[in-house]
Image (cartoon, rainbow, N blue to C red; front, side):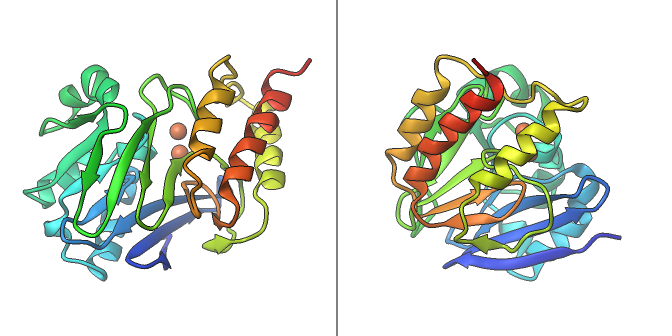
Length: 243
Ligand SMILES: [Fe+2]
Ligand SMILES: [Fe+2]
């Protein structure tokens, strides 16, 4: 039975990490303790009981108010309805596209569909929404930037394998490039498209100048995130659009 590793990677920002050895991959979920608690990534349905117990050590999980994610996939929002049934005031939060094309049919309660520069306030924390279609993947993808603590909830960006530390200051580009090559050689090839918009989306996220990247698969990062995001655009081009 896997366990949940919990780390407070910034004040009131908890990383709940489940390592799955079969994939050599972490699945990370981020809980923000605030007046209106927010969970970013619901986790897989199969991880719900495990995560509910872990969340319960930090807050009363029935008080969750916002359940957000990037794009419609099982690890992002598979357990959404389990959380909504547990927390009566919780509202799904996703992109407007996600709400329209998937979520309001899937979810037991309608979602808040975010459009560019919408801001969600949870108390001390403010989250600004940035659409990022197809980055990392999915028409409906978007990210949240927490403006007070300057944390970018960047979903699958900087995905890398292994069971690394919760928060690192070591450059993530090497492990990210390695993961891309590994995935491109197997049945999951093509998981990230390269389009004319890719560089622009990543550069606009770099322009936010985050201090922390909350990474879904692998270690979170603290350091010069703007440089990392700009360099990621180059790495994606090299790996997915070789000359
Ligand atoms: Fe994904
Ligand atoms: Fe993911």
